Length: 542
Ligand SMILES: Cc1cc2nc3c(=O)[nH]c(=O)nc-3n(C[C@H](O)[C@H](O)[C@H](O)COP(=O)(O)OP(=O)(O)OC[C@H]3O[C@@H](n4cnc5c(N)ncnc54)[C@H](O)[C@@H]3O)c2cc1C
Ligand SMILES: *[C@@H]1O[C@H](CO)[C@@H](O)[C@H](O)[C@H]1NC(C)=O
Ligand SMILES: *[C@@H]1O[C@H](CO)[C@@H](O)[C@H](O)[C@H]1NC(C)=O
Ligand SMILES: *[C@@H]1O[C@H](CO)[C@@H](O)[C@H](O)[C@H]1NC(C)=O
Ligand SMILES: *[C@@H]1O[C@H](CO)[C@@H](O)[C@H](O)[C@H]1NC(C)=O
Image (cartoon, rainbow, N blue to C red; front, side, top):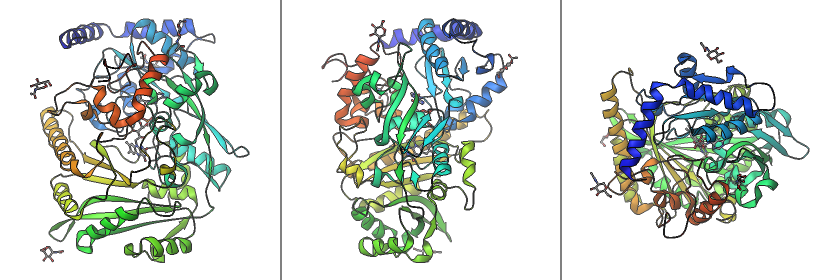
């Protein structure tokens, strides 16, 4: 569609929707009831912004992580539907399609650019929120579990630990992530070096396709099953549940956090970490968290080495002595605990928190933020690190996390599942700028605040260009970054899939488009960065 036509369409449809928004809900309910064999779809599963606005707002905000996307100026869904059964999800797809209403799906609400609950490309739109489809059934005998999309990863970890002290699952570090969005993007965490990603440990899945049919692995076929593991499931259907493979964990694991500032030789130590991080024993995962700290009157960078070791403290000290003695780890830095306690520790819950808190699915972290990611294939030279510190000093809420790769991540071929970032990557960087805002009415001040932080992170990203992966400069799809669709001048459109596609998916990009062409040729499942159907080389892909 030409841009002017597209704009006219947007204006028309938003005018239509603000004039009469509940009719969309009414026809939707009518359609759902006619599609669902069982009893009527309960009215308590609909939350409309015009009819019961406080419940609507509370639900919309409940799992949204990036407060930028809750601002009054951001487009809001007509209503939120919270299905109670798989059949409700099937009907929601059929009815959205029939009524021509754009649909978004939300599981844990952690999307960095809020695209599970904000559509900046189509009005009106609705949100199907999976929060009531969150059962987790663990079967220790077969070392597997079926987990529904609306469960948080923390609930999954907890329910595994309830049944066994020696089973775990290798996925994200933050416990409030929804397994619907998280696992379909890859899902890395503190056991990735030993067992790979969450998506590497998926055995089966149930999804609702574009026709409203439920497909499991054998019905969807290996191409689609490949695509939803790391390739952004939101482009292909609604994920109802995953069957995951549990992995062995020792009864006692060891964690530590050791912090060094610039004055304590952080730069030299970090240079050394870059040489060993991906080559360490696979039982050992040491990430580095960077913050700006103040010592007396001086600003400094604090680098925290935050680690999980799948073994005892004694053996950890031996491993460290042999491969990374420069950190100077001592027995008193090490804490032995159960695997589930280590989940809380790494996620940042205060010491002594009861693991049962995980069943509440609560998040520890809600902020206004903008983030970006990079993959590193060569150690970053010391002078470049020193330049990086200068950059960190320029923002008020900078945060960086460097996450080691190697181990199992290097053994799995790039084309095994759709997630492509494997051998050759030493580590991944996540850059963040976090900030808080006061009263919601100060719209202009907010824009200024946002622009300042967004500008900072874009400039930092530019600074890092020489030191990161090239052709393409890769990015992690779960750290969604809408900047990547923009032209170099920063003013491009969201539709430039040929730019972000290869960054997120490398050589798997074309196959994803071909799978999409078969699974959803009409592009019903779409968003600002969904995979377009592959039409022909020379059209969308070049
Ligand atoms: C604080 C924080 C910490 C994080 N830590 C990690 C980490 O340790 N490791 C890691 O790998 N990632 C991490 N992430 C990134 C995270 O994996 C992604 O944001 C992921 O997409 C979140 O999934 P969600 O279901 O919570 O999000 P949502 O916002 O609900 O969804 C994200 C995307 O997936 C789609 N989607 C959601 N549910 C479904 C479904 N059922 N079927 C089809 N599509 C669906 C949405 O439409 C949207 O496009 C973190 C993010 C945050 C905010
Ligand atoms: C608001 O939504 C809830 C859904 O739980 C519903 O039960 C209630 O009747 C609604 N209120 C109004 C005024 O429609
Ligand atoms: C601050 O920096 C100055 C100059 O580098 C140094 O002399 C001083 O000791 C530092 N102060 C603290 C508290 O570290
Ligand atoms: C935006 O991009 C278009 C096409 O790429 C270009 O012609 C135009 O000059 C750009 N505008 C700005 C303000 O950079
Ligand atoms: C959906 O249904 C149509 C019509 O029955 C069929 O032609 C198409 O192949 C189906 N699509 C998928 C992805 O199964």
